[in-house]
Amino acid sequence: MLDRAAGALLGAACGDALGVPYEFAPRLGEDRTPEMVGGGLGPYEPGEYSDDTQMAVCVAEALRDHDEPCSPQALEQTARGFLTWFRGGASDVGAQTARILEDTDRSLTEHGGGAAEVMTGRSDRMFEAGERCAGNGSLMRTAPLALAHLNDREGLAESAARYSHLTHGDPLAAQACVLWCEAVRHAIVHGTHDGVRDGLDLLPSSVRGMWEAWLVQAEEEPPATFAPNGFVVSALQAAWSAIVHNPVDESSPDRYFAPVMAAVRIGDDTDTVAAIAGALVGARWGRSAIPAPYLDAVHGWPGYRAEGLGELAEAILGRHTRQAD
View 1 (cartoon, rainbow, N blue to C red):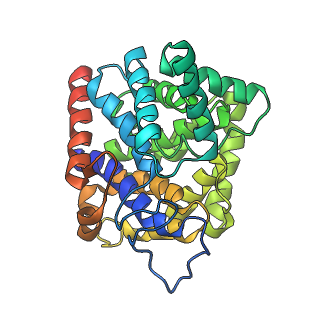
View 2 (cartoon, rainbow, N blue to C red):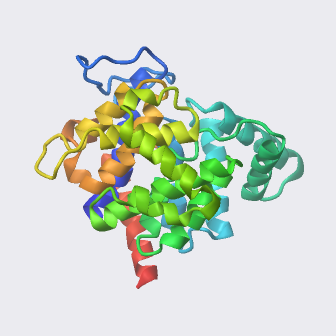
């Protein structure tokens, strides 16, 4: 289980770094293998992960430091972490997230207050104004929450929605995070991908049919169907389609490689889709399934390498396993 928990963080980070060079570039052909060569929108160093993992690290550090994932203190640390990253570590930020963080930073400078409360309020106002705010920027970063809720599906669903809400006021973003976080949790505990569908019962009954139809579409259509994928639903479908259409078993040396490569080849927001897919693939197969060259190369803000990300996962698991006991 520890191997799979570490795999969730490392799988996302490695998928992110593999997708970085190809973000919004021409789609890769089947004859080309994605590589961690850097560049992209950063530009990034070879093996460097982007905002997807950088923001996930802010979430993970708060989970490491607090017993209650949804406590005001944990949410505040996460929000402050986002702002610290935005001011000094962000090399690439999604447009919606950038607006929320800019507005929050300005409000705190002028009026003070709690960062999490201000941030969530800004997200609500964007949604209430009818602006498009169902991007993939919360789905890409919430997988670490699964490590803090391995025996608490309902608590995980609440945390996923709350952490999504910090920057994304549209309920669709929260619902996607609930589904994918439950899938990651289930993969860590049970070693299967069944949690994607099992998580439907955690959503409001009024939207379950809609999400089930979207999952069916992802299972029936080839991964390339789901581009562009900046919309949170398309991003989840892209990641799920890449996994479903590249079935592997535990004896396959490509059990991490194949689905994550497929996610990159979809094109468009490649680092984000590969990070989302990588979190679930890593949670199912574990750190030990990720190719050693990827683990040797992966790194990023604020200074983590593979070993540090693995230790972060272990610290979260240790704290919240003790709490459950």
